[in-house]
Length: 416
Ligand code: RNT
Ligand code: ZN
Image 1 (tube, protein in one colour):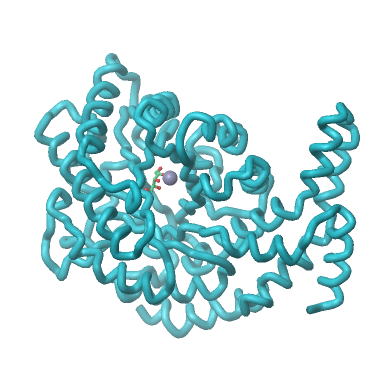
Image 2 (cartoon, helix red, strand yellow):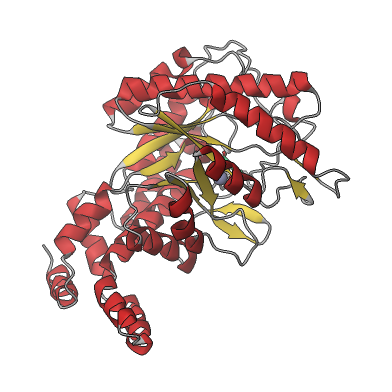
């Protein structure tokens, strides 16, 4: 235990905060690691899926992206070396092991994910799941579950059902609860003449998917809204109001992606409201930059505000924290590690806040002291506690991490 940490511990103790307890809690919060940062959301379908017709776009051409399951696993292992605390793995349906065969998305089953289950088991990682409603010829019109053509809708409905069944089996195999997230890119580039009909079709399709009984002990469904995407600038079927309404009406989880709202709108303030009306929340922690929703997460105000809200609502067990960023312009391992370390840092910082004192001031109508305490918290010796947390977990410090990832880049990534 370093002297710097000891002195920090004393300072926090003056505010009634036990840094030892905080470190343990911060490490115990699961972060769901999105597999898609490793290969730019490509997946391993045969023939190679193309990133077209779906509003998902990764930019950048940093060398060495994972080309197959084995490489992706090696990269996840490498990134995990730098991320302290409990991890889950968030898989998209296109990341199955299809044995070099073409398996249509409405035909996928648990066997394609059995390898991932074993792999995650040996790493004590839980799994989360996502049907993939993009990068497919039947998504090329920009519509899936709300497509005008019943045949197209049916294909995607069957995909959604197949994914829920897979997720349930994964949950059973891991004695855990998988969260399956539904995000559909459906929308129009330009002004629609009919905004209602696609939304009605989307609702009916989702109803059909969720009508299939799944054991909630093993799988829970979540729905994700978005304001706009590339190619769906004017209208997204699954808007915030659509999915907030859908989740409340149907008692599903609601996914809040930090990059899916107006540029100045933040999701932190939404958490306390939604906790009153939906059973649980899934977060896609990301960083919106102008029109892009998927930059690498940082230790910034928006992410700190999110984690503060979860902690202050006492909702660490009802808000599931998943990552959703993808950057192909930097080393992908760095992207993963940096983004997820930042998320963990924000959790730690939120747990170190003197909330009890702030609330005391608030309840006494003493808003000056409340604000002063919030300011005070910002310059408390947070870094000393973070370093201690990393050291105890044998996680390299920031600078060591950069050197170590550079070595992996030289020895592994650049040889691909
Ligand atoms: C897209 C959504 C969605 C995807 C992943 C890959 O805007 O955020 O969550 O990023 O499913
Ligand atoms: Zn998302």
